[in-house]
Image (cartoon, rainbow, N blue to C red; front, side, top):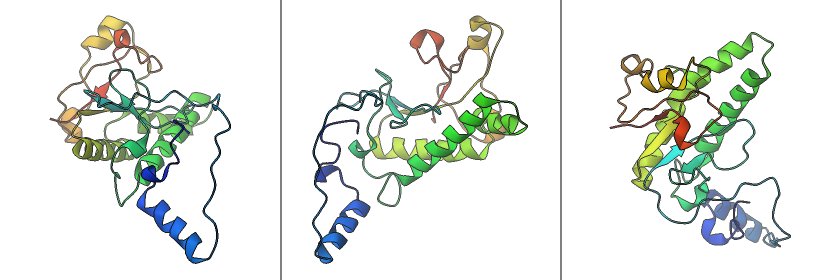
Length: 201
């Protein structure tokens, strides 16, 4: 859990509320929650304040929310925002799971699937990008906060050359991008390495 009150009823989605009501209708007690301590594998959550911008970013090693504060790059728990689609955040979690699966395949290497997985992560024409881009747009609409998409990029000759490189396939994808910077390495997500954040105008 990202926070001590993550399972508080005020954070329940409509689906959770329905499930708890079904327990009550079946004369069963609602689950009891007891805080035992901090999960050493969990990341610290972003402060509960409105960021000036945010980014949809994940990797295969992350177990936290894929929505991150632009100020700190710490994860923003999804329950802080209204439901993304259909009363829940399942679409965000499903996209994250698929992104992580592709990331794990391309990181492991050693098979033909590596190249297909890499295309899904790094090409703006891929199915994974299009789903993530739509989710990013939905989150931006709901929160009214500029929201960007992290586009994976492998390699590069130099930091200067990567910073000067234009975003790929912008016209081909039909996306309008208001701000786009590039990264020398995809794993670094610090200000000085300028990861690729795509936003819509």
